[in-house]
Image (cartoon, rainbow, N blue to C red; front, side):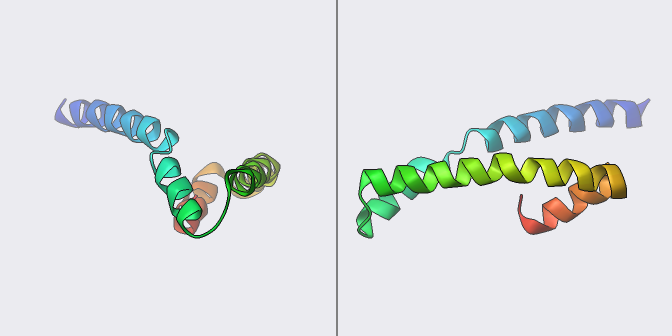
Length: 83
């Protein structure tokens, strides 16, 4: 009974973590940092576009990798890579 309660709490905490990580709080600070280091807004948006494009392109190989080696192993490797 206690384990079930802890599991439910962990699931709620995990969803909160995913929501907060998905909000990208660091992006406005990163934009200011890049502007301070000489990039204009057009260059910053090109960098952000490149990042978004790579994210979409790399989702396909990660899904294939998960099919071959398992979802758990893929998540473990992605966690170590900081994904």
